[in-house]
Image (tube, rainbow, N blue to C red; front, side, top):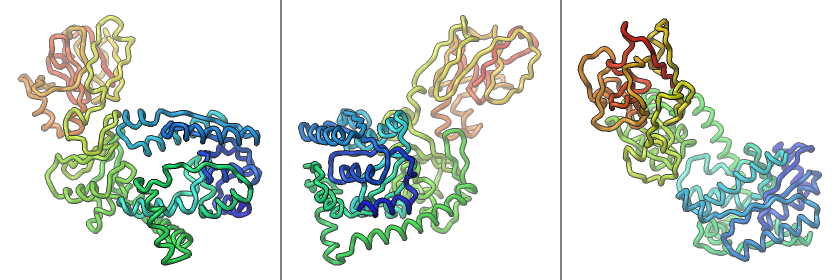
Length: 459
């Protein structure tokens, strides 16, 4: 087993001889074996243990075992206790997903703070095959059938070559103590059902099923890499980024297999296969339809698909399509800007930072782009207010004499639905809109030959 580990690490370039490795150790047979093997292979090792406080005394027993082993072997140990149930509830995710997010974020923090080069996870060949069937059952593309990555950033998986039976045999031969998670025998969990009921039956059909599946996944992985290369080429032709928004030009998508290409382009934004199918079906339809992933929203806007992040607060994938749900949290707040000290302030709202400057000189170019507003200082009433736009808002667009509804103005300048829902206004204390931020100032607050002072607002 030790020689196989060294060969796998070398063949996949997982570790350098001088690397310090943080091993993620649960107390189970896989991670305890990994913690025994890595020092034997010559690596400087530390251990990281997460107590998710989900199984009471059993969780504490796991922690105790890991502490005892590391103390005897003089291995530095780092332990974190998480309120996993609370984190899951606050973020609207499952307990399993909460535990995953918590542990990987903490592993990265420990590695960075303590100077570890790599983080070793004890996933094995059985885990890889179980993940294949789990993804297959839930719906996936080639990526989900290609097996686990042996290396991914700082994360390495040195035991992927080893079947679980071989790991258990090694633990017995070296008298390694480990603990079995009682929940591993509960078939109410999908992964357990695959391990306990599905894989044994397939092994009856093919006794070498595990190694056969690893070969299948390697070939599927090679096919996925080919697809990724083609997708990268398509991304350069069809996609542009504006800030945090991705714009996909529909006419640039190959007409053959559009759904397939969309799946690849949208994968990193969390859209499911079913949602991508709905997006593909809507490509020839009217503008304005919105689709959601847990983290992003997608708008069909004429010949463009626009993908933007959803607000930071956790939202279920089936959240209703409302103006409130599409706005960042900060967009729902207003900021008052008193005259005193305004020039020294910087104000952040809706992901934008505003700065202010008062000028007595009129010797300044009036056209400075849509991120700068030049306003007649003395026409304004303080305190100014930054706020989101509301239905019924009106202003007098620069160069016009009469009022116009903002909703009509947005149609004129072809703002898409996302842009409308995140539009901010700078208002005078009398309620007038002085600047539709990034779009147009109000004609009543423009700089004229009678202006003596200018308020320069930059975003």
